[in-house]
Length: 77
Image (cartoon, rainbow, N blue to C red; front, side, top):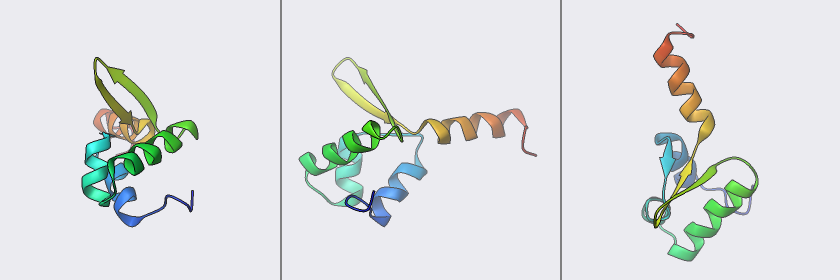
């Protein structure tokens, strides 16, 4: 997704199993609407899963979560 690519965004997405709009806003140094749009686009492409819990919205990096699960069970080592 070249239009939204940035090194800071990738760092945010792969540093944490989930993220929120304010974390992207802070880490990527973009406005809140831009951070929200980036996350919505990534979710629409299936790269993140959007999860609403009450008033909070989380964007989950499912492949990263799965990698953590697999490494925790010892499947890779």
